[in-house]
Image (cartoon, rainbow, N blue to C red):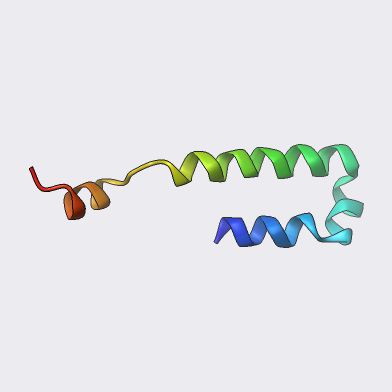
Length: 53
């Protein structure tokens, strides 16, 4: 999942070295925010499956 990938990314010394501290933090927090936004979206499949009108 993206959440697990972000955890691995955050703990990676290599990624910090490759990106540099500022770019690393910017990328990490942007993707964290993206993941949070994704988690609150209810897909069409979920609506059709769980909401019976």
